Length: 232
Image 1: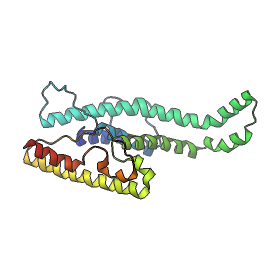
Image 2: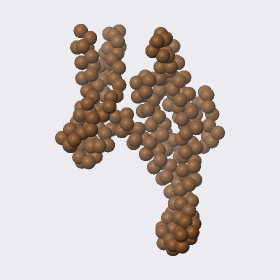
Image 3: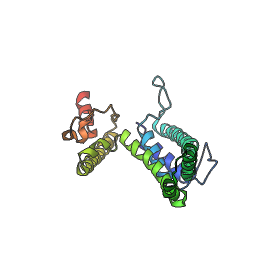
Image 4: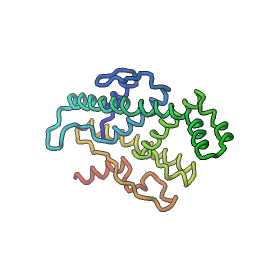
């Protein structure tokens, strides 16, 4: 997975309005909170994909130079995604939402159907509050999907109840905190840090398989322990 420091630094630069490669044509991609929510989605994605620009047959740079290079690569990717994907998509989406009542009215007139009651109910979509809510809904959709894909949460557990879902998030947070501590311990010893990569999910057959370890992937801390045992 990508290193935390380069990706976090690239997100901090973008959120503070510092651009290196691509300056957005529309600097007012509001609401800003929705912009940050989508930026968090990009952060989770880049943190879970390799950012090392060197092929496996090339020799990596030293640690400081490698961090600088990965930071530049992450900055480029974030600027491209935010400038060429999010801002145009968000602008088109919030522009389309207020036109929904008029579109329905035109279609109903073409079909000869009276849809006045429906279009009157949808008139609220033309308000500023509705367009703001649409922007938040779009960014929330990407954020939730990204968090599920990168194993931050497991939305499949919602069918087992909210308490199970919250307890699973707690377990995942605890395992993640343990992995950070153990990886820091490996770093202080000067040893090689094991790579914690996602594997394919296993479809759970019942709610009894709700735990964070039920996905055919070991918890981060257990992965490090097994790595140490196999290295002996």
